[in-house]
Image (tube, rainbow, N blue to C red; front, top):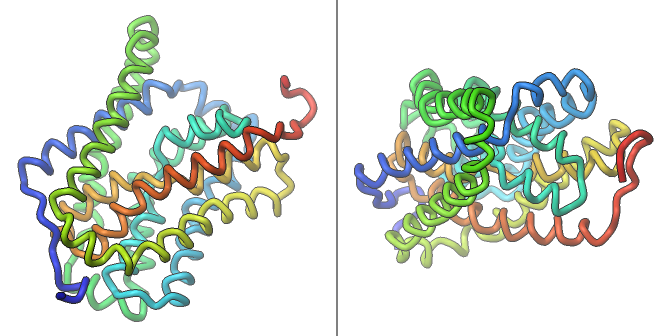
Length: 306
């Protein structure tokens, strides 16, 4: 069995084009749930928003970096963990926050702001943490990733669909209301389908190497949810807000990670296996956490409807 850092998972160019389209549609679906008012709402809860954004783009990548040093996985696995940590959340976080009886308005606003910021911050964040990693940096440099090219790719599959979705939601509210839920469900199912397809098309590799990443992914995912919760609690946010922040930080868009891995890293083994396993594990863990919270009504701050 080849070392995981030496394998390349197969994903033909035509399928990659379709996956890019599906991910763009997913971003469009997220934007249909977004209004300009969501960005204005940030002004009414600046502390909670600042905590959530900092937890996602500063604390989680740093925690992930420390975890890769502690676990000392293969370089490509470490790169995969860092890349996933730098991904923005998806709209499944809004669904899970609702199920957890958390602050959905905060969750939706964080998703909108995070996806907008990720266009610039994601490639810079990844290049920073990957470039300074003691074992993965050499592999990262050998790939010669151009952060500007990666940012341009993110603009196409996140930025443009996101802007179009918001414009549609603002200018065509009646049509948006009719297609919003079906579009969200369809795009999510398509994304899951492509993750399944990526795994199925490389089933032998996943069987061979899943044991190398499963424990790391489980620990990493738990730390991601925990990072959001601890940051929210440490800054004095209410239980109602803590649930939203925890889920927003814990849920990462592994589908975007897979697109970038196949587009810029040639399906590099450890990275692709981490993103593929994360895509399933993250949803299972998120559902379990949201269901547990859902059976325990939160203590809401004064002025919030119960």
